[in-house]
Amino acid sequence: WEINGITHTEVFSLGLAQIKGEALRSKNLVDSLKGNLFYSLDKNIPLSFDKSKNKTIDSSYEYIYEPIKKGLSLNTRMAALYSLYDDGKHQEYIGFGLGPELILGNFKAKTFDYTRISIFPFYKFKSGESIFKFDQISDKFTLNIGFDQQIFGPIILKSNGTLNLDGDSDDYGEFIDSKILVNWTKRSYEFGIFYQPYNQAGGIAFNLFGFK
Image (cartoon, rainbow, N blue to C red; front, side, top):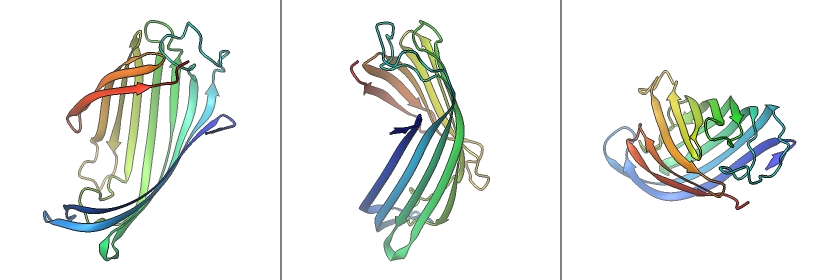
């Protein structure tokens, strides 16, 4: 939702499952009931924006379904997680992040008419530990970097990566998550291919937008 130009995104989830997986400190398989509680609040705060004269699109907008909100903004995030396992074991964190985002262009011209750059550091204050290796909270300090660029017409390159800045981590200084997409974007849909270098996986993506 949006209040006074500030966009808010809120997520709340509860989960309960019986899980079997590799133990945290051995290669043995263990079973445990897991309860999970998660909450996050993201905000996009405009700092300096070009006010578009057009609030809706017309025939000159071939590639997007709403006008671009150009300018500089500040992204913030607060997140909290609590996980409970058998025998009373638990782990939890509360995390905070804040970073700039710059958007340039209108995505109307044929070439290089849209650029988005974002930098977002995020820090977790954590305690406890999981029974399982796969969901142990790690990487307390990360830096997410995003870059999108229109190449030609409806073709846009999108990329993002998460750099591990946790000095206690074995993956310190490495990208622990990354994604590169080449998308064909039109007013009502977006279709593309993506590759994730860290996971060495790829695929196709398809999104539908408002039909305007």
